[in-house]
Image (cartoon, rainbow, N blue to C red; front, side, top):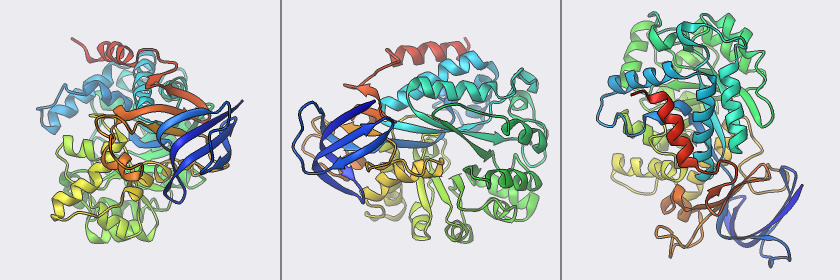
Length: 440
């Protein structure tokens, strides 16, 4: 299947906007990209600014059911609500919810998601007939919503530094790392999906098990982990192991170029240096970190140390990668009292190519020959973008998800004229799926 698009403006490697960009697609790849050319007959015209597909590097799809339901609650109360939602999900209801959430992501220009997946089993930890049934549900949901997915299959063993699991946590765990290895090694998520590994956190996975998860991922899979999200995690880790969470990961052999540390909000200078030395990635989730009052991560110091940054919407308080990118710079301004820590181009790379890379799709996130054919077109005539010059800054510092007009993912039109092409009514799908799982 072939298609030809003519973009009024497009953001091309190495990071410049060109006018009159012709993008020809064959199957799921770009086969020709030309700048400064007139629109050829028969080409689909994309007015506005076209950028590569956005990567949402950290998602918990079922958290979307909590949006606006625990706005005034503290973290403990929010977590209790999250566990209650998790306890009500089964493969069918999780598929419906995840498909609607991924369709919302597509409308926001996201063409690939990293699903940090730990909702493995039925209530009380009983396995489904196919032990990967819940993972297969989210992979199928992404496929039907038209986006790629990396299912970051999560090892989750303890309730917190050796304490027993309880309640909904029981369904998160395989019991021991050997059982996790056996299960994940049989997981085939199907077309358009890949499997990565995740360590939930150093509080939920002891160091010997982290070593085995890291060894499995070292065969060619991305490895993700929640790291230093809150000061309490650091304090608990120091009490249990006498070192920071980052040092625990390093000493267990997990801190390598395939590692993405999610949040990494409360790092010491030695931690930052270790991420840079090992060319790891840090995934920032500013909206969730702000929503849960977790704090502001040291993004500028990480980038200065040579760490790649990616972005995630995490708990989905909002799904808007432009807002996440913008918040990285805005948080630095609040912390420092100065502007100009991250360029618009650097932030857009975090939302595109660097995000795809940390999910194992290293050739994605660029409009160039041979790359997966993803195109996201942003309106330049909305109330937010009108009058903005057609550059990366328009995307990062002006646009929102509401400005996305057209999305092509892996050569397939997923959003046309701001409407999803397969999920006819995304708000209705979200409302119905959430009503099923939130309870009375």
